[in-house]
Length: 380
Image (cartoon, rainbow, N blue to C red; front, side):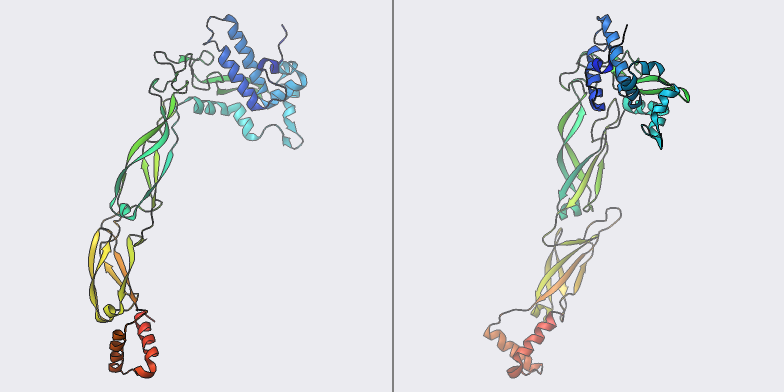
């Protein structure tokens, strides 16, 4: 009995792409799979015909030979005449070294990767927090979209009350052997079973909730504990909170990436925080005691007389807790002396008196005197 044209068997055109060929095969394989058509004796023959067509047309070299010589190429495939089609004057034209290695030896590893347990993908969530949260820690709830195992079928993909059936084509191995006769001899390669996609099972009645995939998309609330001392770029790993695994594989992880919001008063420098505190030139000249804000309340600092602008005062332990150590950083307070732009008549009179006491000539050098005062308290 003459064989049907392989393109006709799969219902594709002769210029169909590899993706179109694979898509057509999977559609027909599901339709005529023996597990689905147990009462139809012709289904298995039809399935084998479809599989044979796919094996040839999905292989670039075999497809090229088939396009040239038809079914006669399959009868002689593997002889020197057929194998030579894979060489060009400059070496391999249809295959690279990795392709040949995969063709003869690498199928087994690929099949196992496809059909065996696979770990779920990791997820990332960007969390913005305040500087206070970074300093003292935070417990919050986030909501993430992720793929989880279907509750109705328990991740099997089969309709509740049923179970996936062993694929009769690969007998549950998820792999199929392909024998090739080549110029180097006879080779047996193992590749993923196209009938079951490497799972080793076939779902006769898919779960209506997940459509047979065994997984569903959900939004899940997760409690996150942010430790004290984190900074922008810190990553928190939450084991097992990523995407669900495949074929019984473990779930992935969730990574929380921290972003600390800019503060209106403080600038973080490592574990220290820095702020500027304005003071008057009178306070700077005579000295004073000030109350300044900190991350956890207020503190008092003593300004000695004659303090110049830019002087830094340190508050020990008022900075950020060290994430991987003991204690905390410091708070540094940089004072900035403010010189008034406008003076009342009384203020000017007092300053003229001060100038006289200081040996300054106010009548002819008032402007120069105020300039010197301004320079003195501005640190120039």
